[in-house]
Amino acid sequence: MQLHKSAFRGLFFLSLLPLVADAADWTCFHGPRGTGVVSDAKLPVSWDQETNVAWKVQLPGQGWSSPVVWDGSIYLTAALAVGDGGEGYSLRALCLRGKDGSVSWNREIFSQSKDAPPIHKKNSHASPTPVIRDGRLYVHFGHQGTACLDLDGEVIWKNSDLFYAPVHGNGGSPVVHGDKLFFSVDGSTEAYVIALATETGEVVWKFERDVEAGAKFSFSTPLVIHVDGVEQLISTGSSVVHSLNVETGRMNWLVRHAGYSVIPKPVFGNGLVYVSTGYDKSTLLAIDPSGEGDVTGSHVKWSASRKIPYTPTVALVGDAIFMISDEGIASCLNALTGEVHWQQRVGGNYSASPIVNDGKVFFLSEEGEGIVVAAEKNFKKIATNALQERTLASYGVINDALLIRTQTRLYRIEDRSTRSR
Image (cartoon, rainbow, N blue to C red):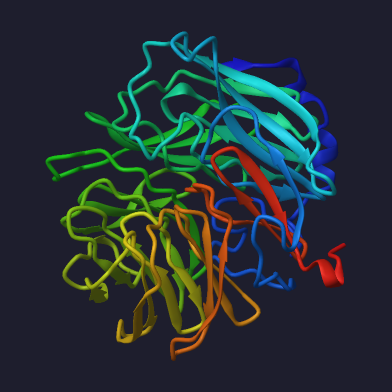
């Protein structure tokens, strides 16, 4: 673990001026509220490669991390091939100006050797989404390491001491809460959850998973929830969902399931945690998080198993869950009972997670097609929008505009008739 002198620069001022994301800032994967809901914005519902495109810019290297936003700036990670790619990759963080997409800074964080483990064809070497909190940017490259930067791109600390053997590369994103950064490590032989100190990058605690699945690997992003005044870290791995004490890493409760290679992030609302269980047959579980110990038989309030996504995270709006299966079946479920309000094939293949804004659900296919439907309990398609570029990253949001990362570009999509701020 490498700590830079700048780690101590400005800590006093940050302690006096805590920064909290407002509605205009999209600070982490699936949005700052963790539900996929975009408040206080009016996003465009129609676009193509030219229509309602404020700008589009070529991105360096490759990466499927989703864009995050703070104070009008956009932050991403990317992996830039060294030489012809056979010499490894430069793992980088970059900042773009929201007004025109120009690059403010582009910084190498880690150097990945040519001997790094192979990745899945739908993955990249820069897939975890960054997190912005309290004037700092946290970037994560899985087994290659984690780092903290200030928003001008200066490295504060790096931690590359937690090497493990991944399967298919890296996927799960980190989360920041209080003075800790959390992420899940579910590799070929090791399975644990880790907490790092946000100020130094040092390990605060490590929780070893008890995995019963034949395949230990998973890629899920954790979630912090508040239940009866107690903070819980929810982390889904192969065969098990864990609730951990955020301060100590001690287990609160667990739920067993039959899945592995779990990708979707848990979602919390209505007093329930909603968890997708991964391959080979994904199930959506609604868990009451008030228990202790093994609550598999007592606190799973309902489950659904028809057209549940393997990769996209569900979006939650009140008592309705909106989701898209990997093969393009959109659904609306009653979040209190699991009852299906509607299921409809919308076409395409899906890895990106949907978001909800102004009574509409925004899906984004791997083929670059944005499908907009009504966020209602009866199916109604509003628009089909084709960029005709491959994309696996989820939407980002900046003011009243969508950010869409394709294989080679970043687009800012906004209603050009009523220009965004």
